[in-house]
Image (tube, rainbow, N blue to C red; front, side):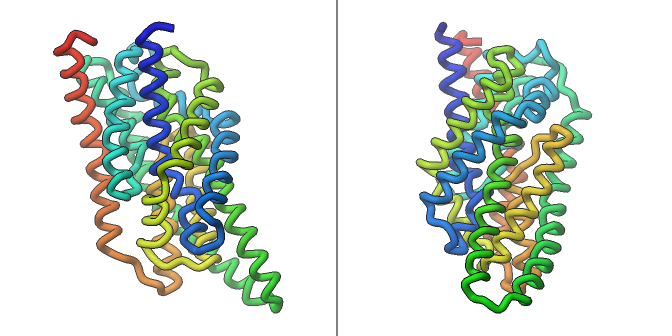
Length: 320
């Protein structure tokens, strides 16, 4: 295996680790915030279901990221490495700050950046559809979360046994988080391995398994800060609201998976959390929301700039 291939694997691991570190909160942050699962229990559950989702269903979104933005044949191994590295740099900065930014937006920005730097054709129609999904998914998540919250609050109000209610709370938290983690694997793993598939370096299922394992390591080692932000700082969550936010966002991501669009699970889960927080009258911490929205707007633009700078740096030293 040559140096270029080893570099590609190392950089893909780096971005997948970043995704696991930053986006794991989208699957289990609310359950941890509500005190239903411990951090260790949450990360173990994430690892199992992310691997399942990535291996079984990750190929659709992987194809969009790897071949839908820059057409097949134009994305080289060098370009894939630069796109992944650029995305990873920004997500690492955001993770240290505890901000649940969109890794999807970061890697898409990275791919756009190398496409522009090399004058490769960019499929702007595909990008328009992706950007539209970024706007629609948190709105749908909030709507679905509100509907689920009302339904399960009504179900719980009919129950008389405290032990039965507690058991239901835990089951719903685990079910919602697992479903989100599965979708997390099917959608977000493409952000790590899609460029490698597009460059012809890995088959989709191999890339999916590699990305999922890397994601799980990131979740286990470096996800606590963002999980705390999603689960505690946005709004105070109870068991029913935690489940509604998780499951509502998972439904929105599933819809995107069906059509192969790489949406942001960060945006989806925050939309769900905000929806149930407002409905339950718990209030929403506006300063935290504004910081998160700023990260969403800045992420694709910052990733494009970083990608262009990294490409110029590589070209200057003769690496591309």
